[in-house]
Image 1: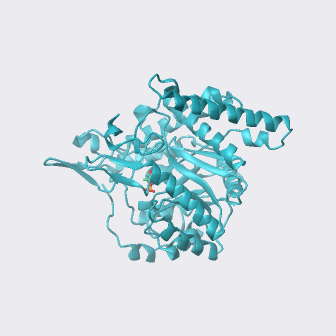
Image 2: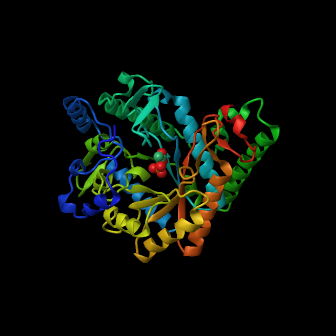
Image 3: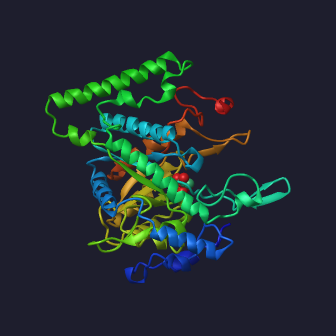
Length: 439
Ligand code: PEP
């Protein structure tokens, strides 16, 4: 499934370019492309790409510029970024209940953040396009049968059959359609006032009224909602100028820009503006596995005008990070580059300071965000993959400490989250144990 795997980091770095003159929406095709599907029929792929190029964009370039300005303020310490959503979206789960639950949890978290940080919060969902996933192995083996891994609904299907696991260009079009359906519903809900911050009681998630939920938890939630409402009313009574700004609700979209056929087909120039915009999302990001300097993903994302995120794990070398910043944000433009660190709670104190110091010393104006999910995975003896809530919290707290000590501002958090009633992490306030994960 992987087009070019195992290219050495050194070879990849040697071939990167920073010149705008030699970038086009398809210049990535000459680069090693990790985690990309190989489509069996080039003609069918080309026709899917041609249709995607003709379709209307999923987001407006003006919205992407608006997000970039908002993120410039975040980087400056005037606001905070909350980015979150499902690990992966699936076409089957594109339903009104799923979408509203996701918005509800983002709204609730943002209100808590507004209350705590006394700053506006910019909400960026991992939704309306989070349909492709990187995999540690290109193939999956069950007994004697080995098939391509499932790379997300944008690429193939999860059933363990050769047909389902074949990379299918029709899935690119289905991805566009489901992203459009999701976005349409989010935009209608927002326009209809669903997200009015004065009525947090409307955003109760269904499981809050579940009978077996401990009464103490329900009461705690109710008290928090009441307190937040009272705080808002108090600020308004004082004629606080910023209330309006604090409570204005907008959602921006983001996803990992993994499938470059999909991303580049929706990349275009817009009237009265210079440059190119990738209009599948307001803020695409490059994953930890595809951030090689000489690779196809960095080549593609260096050429677009949107804000771009890049995930950075514990193996990142400080010099390489500075170079990556230079390539992805040649003009050192405020709000352009979001560095999302996902180091792992146990390594943050060692690995994060040299990265932050190097970027600061190079004078790069990046927005620092912590993703406490992807560096804290663990596999239990049962084979279940999980994360400890305490590690998640520790990575956030330690990242704040490191940025404080380095004199930089940690401007946001990137979460995998869901509005559904799931048990995925161990520990936390309820002290969920390994054996309860099946609940
Ligand atoms: C993700 O955010 O879904 C992901 C795979 O993250 P990372 O690239 O940081 O591993």
